[in-house]
Every structure is written in structure tokens, then in C-alpha cells.
Length: 472
Image (cartoon, rainbow, N blue to C red; front, side, top):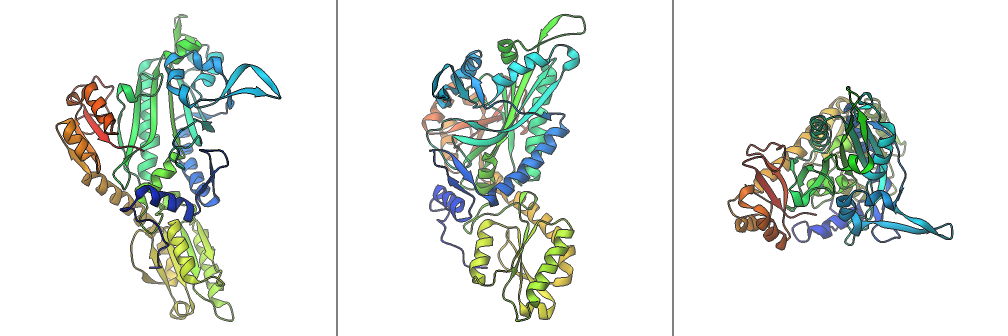
């Protein structure tokens, strides 16, 4: 294996390791305004794969994409008291535009429940207009005090879905289907990140919601990362924005609404769940580049480069996302190390000796060591290798999650267990006082589950289990 670049070891300083990877793998830079980020092409290609996979699942769930304004009248947010209170510290407000003071300040969207609610009220008249299921891919602004690229920035990219339904039961079912069939399915199937599904406690719930469903993941340092949420909003926003409909009897009813979203935070989750001391390990299904073919060195006739180009063409023809690195003016060791740092799932090395023997050297990013395979067999074998790597990354993360989750019976024991992973204990033994005690130790109840690990209907269900951890 190529000599790794100088990265801070995870065991020494995990946050420093994370920042080293962001910088040295050329994923992102800090923007010129505090808390903003510039996503570089290599990382953006991964984000595009994430976006495409999530978008396909959202559309399969019956939602349609739309776009709503970046600027929201301040008065819209004040209509829903819990919502504006929850977001007030994070709002970026414009008071001057065009050289003049605005008559009414406008807020740069922190989320779009209010502006979308305004238009839902216009578009929904009858039960025949329901359910109305909308999704938006956009940027949002939440003025964070402590920022970290991808994980918590003042501006980030995301999708936000918003729906209106005729009944609470239909809204509940839809919010759950987004959690299960869109978010968890994507995170486990494409990102290879195992997630715990559950509901948030009252104090951790989305501002203005009556229930919040969440996907929680464990990072390699044992901390929790909230990967995505789906909210039942009840009739709170429908009441504030008069989102109503005439039912089959002609009586006017209020809608039941939902909202749900995932963001570029998933990029941070992928990095911290799979990365090692050599850099990234990108799951093949979301990798912008799944295979890189490196020319070790060429002969005078250029036959190695020609063979490498032919292999690239064959792999691309079979649907593999592949790149050729034939820049032999740079040291091979440096190039191999760079691709290892970027976490490309498969690296194929080809030199004069390999070509003479009809072989190629293959390196899997999820394993140490190299293997030699017949060059002619590679086009047929690479797809299988990628599938094996995808499975291996998920199984590795799942084993780590199981091994770092401890069953405890008291808040004191939970504080100790959550120092290195997750604690799991009966929620009735936590209570509000227990949540206060956990907060003093920078711990939170990440989600509530049923005793068998399922998703409860709400926090009033009996025998709930609290998943406790430190969070990003």
C-alpha cells in the first residue's frame, strides 16, 4: 500500500483528522463569509450521486419537485409561535435592499414551512386536491455560532419535502414512509451507513411539530450524527396559514401537514462513518469515481497507456464510473496515495511488467494489500468487487455500532457508557430530570425506540427505550 499522507490519527484527535481529510482530499474550503463553505468538484460529484438517489426515492413516494423563494416575509414566521421561537437565534434577516430600508424585513429561509404553507393554502380547495406532496432542492441559511464543514454550516444544501393530507392517519403514514422507504433505505443501501430509527423526545422535536422521526448514525469516534428527520406537523401550520379543504360533505376541514429533509450533513456522516487513518473510504454506489486506472510507468511506444485507455473504455461501457490517471510525469507513489486519500473504491495499477504478463494489480480501498488479476478478466469482475466493497463497508459500520452500544439501567451508567458510544436504557427511567442531567454532560436522548428496536407512534407509547449519545 502506498505511504499515507500525514493525517492526524483518528485516535489522537478525531475532529483534527476530519478537518485534515476535508482539506487534503480536496473536498471543500471555508467560504469568505464565516460559516459558509465551498464544495469542490470531487465532493460535489458524490453529492450529486446522493441527490439523484434520494430524489428518485422521493418521486417514487409520490412527491413532485418545485421551487419556492429564498426570501420569506418576516411576518410569515411569526404566524407559528413555536416555529419562530425555535429558529429565532439562527435567522439571517435582510433590512436594507436597493439602497433603501425595507418596509418589512425579509428572512433568508432557514426552512420553508411558512412560505410553502402560504401557497398550499392557495392551491388546496377540495379533498380532491389532497394529498399535496411537494419537494424542494435548495440552499438554506441558519446562522450557526460554531461551524464545521458539511456538519454544521451557516449555509448548506438540502431537500425539504412538505405535504398536506386530509387526515392525521394519512399524514402519519406518509411521514413514516419517508423515514423508512426514502431516508433509511438510502442511508443503509447507498451510503452503507446503518441508522437507528426512532422518535425525538418533546424537547428535541422540530419547532412546531407534534412528532419528529429521526435517523441516527454512529460515527467512528462513537458520537451520534442526526442524518435526517421527518416531522408530523399536525394542524399547527394549517391553522396558522389556513390550509383547509372542503370534504365530501361540503364541510370545511383543516389539513394535516408534514415536512422532512436531509442535507449535505450526509457527506460529513459518510466521511466520519467510513474514513480511516489513510483518508476517505467512499461507498461505491455514491462514488463519483468508482475505479481509477493508474499507469505506473509507460514504455517508449506508449503501449501501457494504450492498454489502460482500452481498459477504461471497457469499464465505462459496462456502466462503471472510471477515471484514467496516466500522468507519469508525477511520481507513482504520490498519485497512488492521493487516490487512496480520496477513497476511490478500486484502484487498478498497470505497468510494463503487468502488461507483459497479461495482468493488473488491483487494490481495494476497504482492505489492505494488493492482488494480481488477469487483465482480460477485469471488465467482468469489477462490478462484483464494487458490490463486495459496498457490503463490507456496511457490515463494518454495523458491527461497530453493535459493539459500541451498551444496555444500562441508570442515567449515571448512561453517562459513562456514552463517553465512547451509545447507551440504551428504559425511557421511563430517564424522564425530564434525566434529560436535564444528561444535558449537563453534553449528552442527549438521540431517539426513542420500542423495546425491539422499532419506531414508536409517539413518546406516550409504553416501554420505550432511549438511545443516548454525544452528538455533532
